Length: 414
Image (cartoon, rainbow, N blue to C red; front, side, top):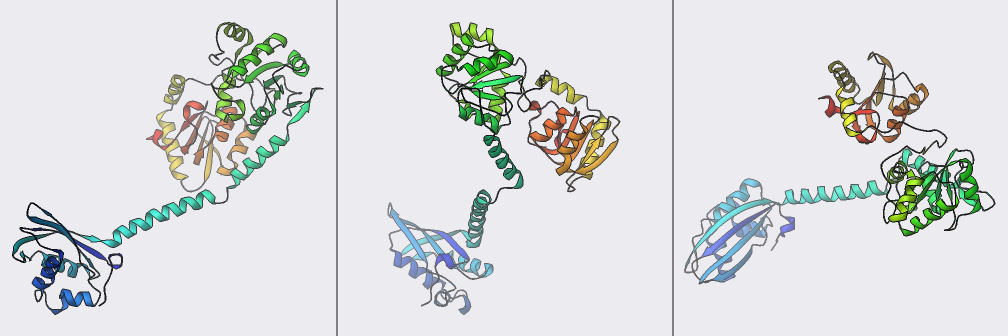
């Protein structure tokens, strides 16, 4: 006799059964076949349907409580929807099983393909995620990896003490003193090329000589050892500023954001001496930004506070908002960017891929940029240096509070 399993069926008929008495499983299955015989005609006879494999094995589970029998019935079907519904309805005509009154109620007809489809979709998502994780990196990631490797290769040795240092330590007017070579490498990876390592806990003569003619900032690990190094440096060298990594972290573990935050939080050496005399060093508010990518250039402009940013953003006029909104809408799908002057005239349109280099070359005269793309840190920094007032894009990876240029997205123009 041909039988179909539930996994091969298109539909599952699920029903509950309640019997006023005690019966066995064979009694229930016999009643299903016997009392539906001849009811639906020869084409929908349960025995014939099961022989041809269009109805699968009828599964019955039951338990006896308080002299009554309760259970469930599952019938797999490869019939079409209408025929399956007719067979399910026929089940409810059964009123007696053996000598006992019975009541069968079909709870639902489950489409097996729906659950299979959901399983397919979930598995496809998982496979796609694995593919994306293991796929080749894009050109930007490759370029970043190559750049980082080159920066690591730029570590040099200076003075007679052979101190590990970045390539710009000798020429820069500002230097950052760290504990070891790994710290110099970490700073190089993030574009800071004016770091020099002590190579130990004792202060080498080379560090003392460097501090005499340069503005020296000490950046040490956020532990007790860092405090001890600061004390020794303050005693023997001409240190100007002091800062530390977050508590419990080493400089070589820091990400770019944490390094920049630590450098912005540096405090004067005299203040550090006072604090170290009574308690562990705790950097105060931002005094002045140390140059990260170009150590020879002083940046006196502090990042505007959140309240100042809100005021600046609120100065966007209705005409400007409408112009930005229209330009952004026109550029959807073009991967282009429009450069505007203070009179809201379009100076030119260029591909997004050339936007950063163009902004750097112009350096001034740009009032706003509207682009079909995403604002990233590189674009935000280029816009800041070119004194751009607004950068308008579909999306932004840079939080407005972390940029000195006003960044607007679609939702800001509604």
